[in-house]
Image (cartoon, rainbow, N blue to C red; front, side, top):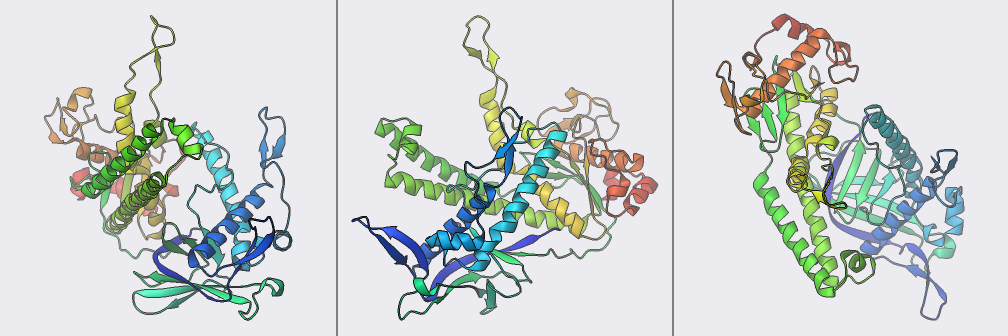
Length: 487
């Protein structure tokens, strides 16, 4: 089942009613004392830690192959088979966690585990690196927690006005964990800023450090009509998207470069503090020698990275929606982005054992940075699920090999056709146009050939029957027109 989210910004958080019981702590004299707090930051951190703890407890039940792949062993050193009720009784700091928060890791951990294993199997079949086994959630990751809606049992949303709303998460302390005179019930009220109407949702995900909240709900179909338009798209670094009609769609590079420059400036400031300490970077970071200024710089760097990610995601959401609304058929290259950003192999120096010759890794590092900045995989992912939700719109993936060298008019293929990164000049028919536009036209032509033949050149087993609207294959076979004429 496909799900999507509506993301909203958190404006402020309030804790009303009783102060939530956070567990026992040890004072200076070594005595245990109960702790209550109605500080919103402390309460949200408590919920995030509780959710991550329960998630990792459930993850200990998973099995993995040992080093010799002779037997299955537990993923964790100790298998935690306790139920939610037993955890509340034995871990005092989890006793007052709302039930809809403590129950949510059960389903989410199971979904994460099986989806990660399915993804690893798919990558193995494609002869790609599957990555490491799914493990535990770390403190270093973005702290968050999930609360089920459960038909209004918790995480209830109330709209205040056109631009603001509040999500109420309710909970209660047990009688033995309640402060006298304060009652036992408490409410965590998260005020959010709205940009659109909130649709019916099944759960919410709260990310306090990042400052946003997401409503998980069913996707809506994209209303559209047949336009008869088709396009091929060439993804690249110079132009984010080049269409077969000669138009270009680019990321807001000026804003992203400004953010990247600020990140580099702060990273240099961090490196300067490491040098002044006289320690190695690993000893400075892991040895507990980090200064407060170093940590403040790290928080700002994380904030800038999140800002850049939001800019790219917003750009791709808008562009993918526009492409799906305008075109009946969109053809993309099935790029192996992981292989494209792989490190260059070291070249040993035969005259000096133990040394290595230049292998172009310095230049490759710059290309890898450009590939990551372009975020090519994000646009494909968004086009895939949006074409599934739209009527009479399809996405087709084709083999990316030799799409930039052939001439889109006569088909002549040679390296000399590419005069530079941006210029294409056919040595046979004399066609001159932008190299990315020529590649986009070739991609569209290859998509037509794939539809007509019913074969999948990318090796996925896709045929014309795998496309949502089968009439597109009939239209492509009947038209057989020039790619530029369809625009």
